[in-house]
Image (cartoon, rainbow, N blue to C red; front, side):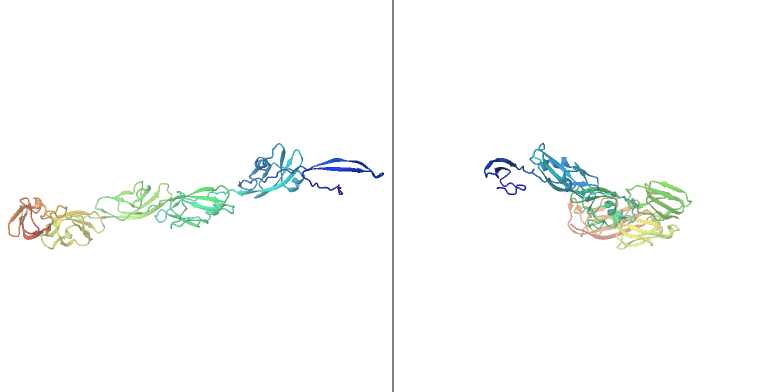
Length: 484
């Protein structure tokens, strides 16, 4: 028999029949016996735990989640939505009492707890559980403005103050990672090639470039901004004092570090008049002090320099002012400097192959010269107008190599101007005195053949007779070597 009929728990499964027997207290007889009570125990609904998606928010009270559409299907699982009801609550007490159900929740903190109750519409059975919804901060990247600057050392670079760059980009955000990239998407490097990582350095030496800043956390979509660093060119240029010849003008051209860039030019003349141009040049005719200011096209960067224009007398030189010793082993050129003009002059000598024999020097004396046609450059010590004169110095080569390699393939005397001579005869002999060739200074040089036959390597002799228009005669004999 069941003793505690007021607190009985079935023991035979979901359904159980309870038998009732009725006995008489008067005559000790059984009045009745039968299955009068049927206990039915309905199962609780299946309580499935939903998966929680990632919610990225830009601050408190910025995201509202529709609980029914977001979670009902997963909580019900295979249970029919027509047979069960799912409700959501903000507290366990509300869920237990089935009061103050909500259909949505708004993020007020970074972690919101939701209680949910599933109710069997047929049996009236229900069950309760809970889950947490985390709300993650969406990365934000605040803009950072860098003012355009002018380069300072003519290298295209400027040292920017970036001490508050990262703090500005992040604002009040915490637990964020910051990375920096160049325009090609590569990790940003400093001027020394080291990769720049967070925190961004307080000063940043760079040329003009756009960098990309990426703010991220482990969950939400990155925030990306671009920051432009602009360095305006502030060209370096050279301008030197100018000497103009007596009564003339001179084109002054600035030596620009980068002539491909465009600038504006302001020239202040000695009379204080101003000329504005877009070209780095000026025709100067006034004597005195000048100022030139070079600025970029928007006027944000400029640089000024001063220079002075002097006047000087250019040299005047002819071959009559030059004494030439030639046809010897120690040829020389000596200039009569007093005949050139009133200034102090400098002299430079270049041979006929363009090789510098002597750089500019104070004296016009040049010794130990081989011979040939020399270019004699003369200028005053302030580098006014430069003049050049060709000086012929008779040169008799001591060998030649007729192998058709383009070097010393023929033999003849050099450094003579045909118009200076009224007669010339050059004879070539072998070692036995046999005449091989007669020619003049206007003839082609000897190619080392006789009657079309190539002559062998050996020494050969020459006899030279030259008569100038003034009647002076130059006669010389000697020998040279043919090398094959």
